[in-house]
Image (spheres, one colour):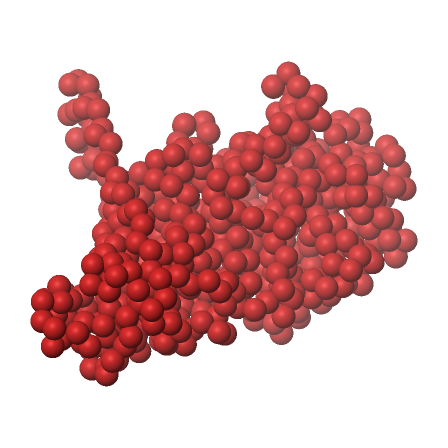
Length: 536
């Protein structure tokens, strides 16, 4: 199967943060998983670089828009390798081929009669860079930016989005997996119960010049969303490149919930106007709050990926984000939660299992995979759990239930740690008559580790590589050939290494000033309880 996974292209009015990292780690994990599942995969990310907010941000930085977008886009590109993120393509909306593709598509849609010129009066939110309807407002404010939109009357070009409303409703209803999770599918269908307005797709150059000029009227530039969404086609060589024919039918988009409407409504109707089949699936994830507060530059709680990598390492960050959040729901990030996951799940559970198992093979089997003898019930139980875990992991990964997939892996890790205690290989090693039993126990542990390594490859690629090398597994990860029990060859070399995850110390918070302690205590006591959504 051909599989095309995309992140949203990130708007360069801000530097990379935790939310950007989460989206891109998911896409990289999905890409790696689909590859070891035997599929032909294309993974794309990039940056969105036109529009009002970019021009304003550049002015605040005393840079030209081009200087500004080059600098911030480079930050995004440089953020991903330290997180072991390996996209096949990094696209920018200022790339010449993207600009040409946008203009070509605009002309096609215009020639089909789906773009017209008209005057429009509406409520324009600069933060969203779009017109809002009265029903979208909360107490007269934009629900995302909490500011009142500005009344604007101007002439612009419009896309006949309303023409495709009934088709879109039918497509969503006939394809239940088109928008996932289901709550977002229901949200879109609820929105589509009301008449769909046509989409304003231009901005006059009298108020914005930083954009792609319309091919049929150079007094206007393209609305940033009409421009940005087309990146998914540009990146695979639309209309006649070999990658377009190869990957478009397998396209799956990954987004955060704040950009649901453009991806679930604008984009499918644009594709329908072009005569293209819509993408296969839209996967929508929730927000990361920081210490129970929405992440915001204004209050200074923005989390930078580089800081997290420095604190506990890239694989620990990847594991935490995928394990902690239930896909589609919001979750909360804190340094304490990250360190707790690292120390408990990675250092204690996984790290100790690997270290103890390999050390015993070194001490009792001269760093060689021992031959397995007759299996007892406890051996068969662990073997069945490990092979069953791989099957369940695969099922959960295919539906983006990453926290459930990893929970299954950690059940087996816990079981393997108990298996060591219950079978006490160090005691078996004292009795020559127990040699066959010792070999069977250690082989069972090594095989369990091999299957755990297979499942960790998409999530923690560096850790999985270290484990694979230590176990002497030379073949590349592959579910079809490696998910069966008994693949390790007796007498193959095993190479114990350094601990995978050294324990981390929690930072000791500075004491609050004396005159603030009473106030903080009363605030804490008065704070209502919180239900942590998204915790596994």
